[in-house]
Image (cartoon, rainbow, N blue to C red; front, top):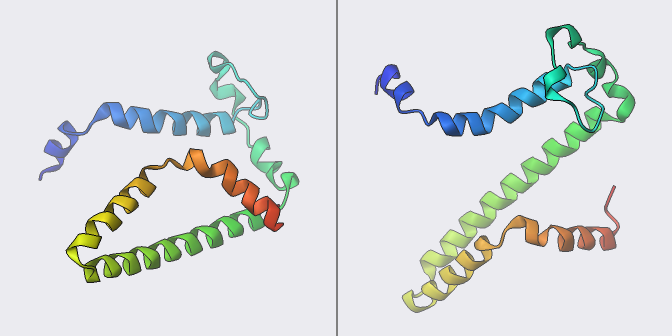
Length: 133
């Protein structure tokens, strides 16, 4: 497919929905009032661009350690999810046809539960295990 055809078929509404928040986040990070809770977008200007927010970033805490924790956690979750999916697919291939439908139904129902519904019970479980913070 040629590039011109691909550009014409691009869903511009989706691009706006996903990229406008990112652009605003970047613009507000360079603004002198980025630490405030509410910012009037009408006051954003080129003159108010500053790198002070990025200079003050190390004073908020161990940023490098937070990034490392995020990368380690993401890698463990990705590898664990992949291994679990592979083993589940293998198990479903080995099942008889009668049990495969039931297992697939349970799997689809469990995947249909949104993460927002289980986030508080997950936090409570982690808190009771003593591994928060």
